[in-house]
Structure formats: C-alpha cells, structure tokens
Image (cartoon, rainbow, N blue to C red; front, side, top):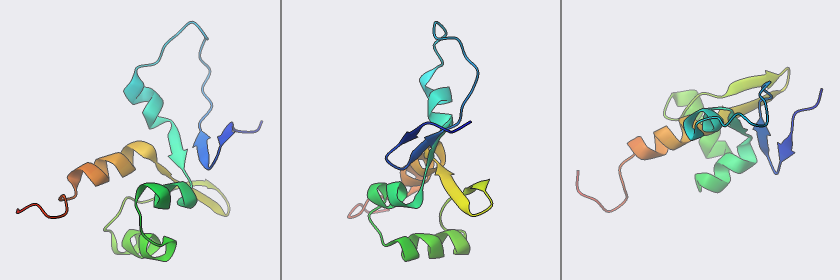
Length: 90
C-alpha cells in the first residue's frame, strides 16, 4: 500500500474512522518531512542540515525504508522553538 504524498510530506497511514477526529498534536505527530521540505522550513543548505544531524545539533531522522529517511514535523518544530531567536540577547 502506498503512503499518501504531498510535496515531500509523508503521512503515516493509520486506521481511523472518518467520523473520528484526532487531536491536532496527534495529527502533527504523524507527519514526516523529507530533506527538501526540511530545508524549506530551516533555510540552510542540505549538506549543512545533514552535518548538524551528524553532530547531534539537529533532530535525528526516522528511517522510512532501506534508502529513505524523513524527519518528524513535531521534532523539527520543537527544535526550532528551542533555538534562540536571532538578534535577541540571551
């Protein structure tokens, strides 16, 4: 069975009834972003992002298949929220 695809965003399939509404935080937990989508959110080069991941300075990806990885949207958003804002004194 193929996963739904929206411009670089993968959504894990889950058996739910159409009448059932998932809370927004649970829906968000199901969204996975490929590298192109991540670098649209975090404006750095793909190589820089991958270096940050290797160094442990960015969230680790989730393996989707043998040669495919993605990042959880909630992990990216939490990472962005934890980073200091440019120009603010800490």
